[in-house]
Length: 209
View (spheres, rainbow, N blue to C red):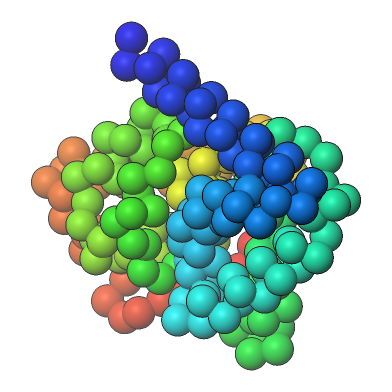
């Protein structure tokens, strides 16, 4: 029942987003504002996980591109979240190349953790975490696991959509997300201590091999 209720809530969420996007494509400023309100928290959380304190600027650049190319988008609410995440990821990686920095996880705000369409394992692991704990634990994951968790839990994408954003196979992304979330859940089951999965010094996400 709980899982079915979550699925229905997600469907309603995407239906609202899809309707807002359709209105925005017809020139309705209110429609664009509604789509922005729905998508922006998760998008900002995802970008913050990649670039840290520069997330506001990078996400703003992404929204300029989203607004410019909105007429080219074809799809529903879930598709729009994937499309915007792809644009945001490109802007984030461009920013990192300019800064010669690796993607890293940073602050994940509490309102981002409250977005719909979370997986059951994520519910178990993340609902019990404070913002600081989420930061430390997700930052300790390998890069591919951390980014998969961000896309699945923070942005709310399903496996195939997250795979399209990352340019990988769906099974690979699903496995990365599962491993990352399982590691968080196991950490909580062990008493919620973070130090067993973090290194003594601050670290960035591992390079993909």
